[in-house]
Image (cartoon, rainbow, N blue to C red; front, side, top):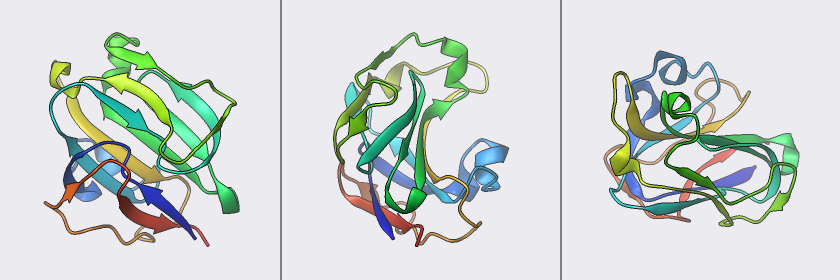
Length: 150
């Protein structure tokens, strides 16, 4: 099992309630949504491992036991084409748990069908296979969110 930490602070939202049908149905994998606190924040890696993919709006870290964790900053934020995001980590690099990945300000996300909701997903894990914290609770950066794999 791998412990997945909160990459940013905010209010916890069940994945089934996030405003994106693909993530809500756990098609990418199980996990949790975080309604992020307003203001600029450095989003950190939720696990130690290899940064498989690093985009301005999303990144994937491969950890032990071949568990990949996706952190997606906002919904439909790919449309921003990187505007408003500062990438701090290099794709292919080794990252530490809690290491800086992306700097952004969720308060600036607005537009049709866009949301600042952060999605933290254990990719390719069985639907419903992670126990997530109580919805409505508050996640602090670096605090345990769930365990995956194993």
